[in-house]
Length: 82
Figure 1 (cartoon, rainbow, N blue to C red):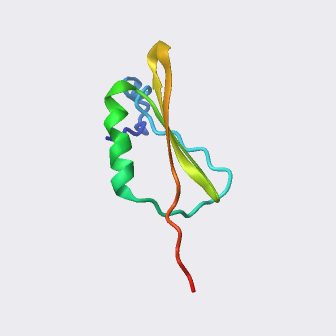
Figure 2: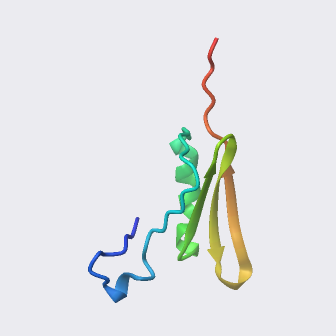
Figure 3: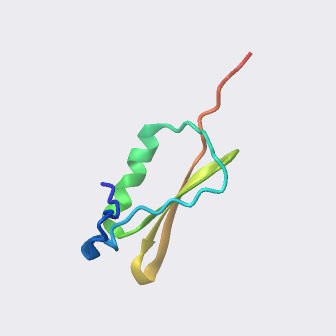
């Protein structure tokens, strides 16, 4: 479930916002099957961070209270060109 901050500045949604920090555009393809496995950890955390970089695996990080964090990595699909 994605939450976005409302343009009217609704105070109740300030904690439930999507923040996107873009340094350079990236276009990668990932297997949804594995991303779906990662989402099983969603109930453990109020926040998830997705980090993408060119030629680097996707990092999915859940902050888990005082215990630390849970981090998954997924390599992008590679096109087999002959």
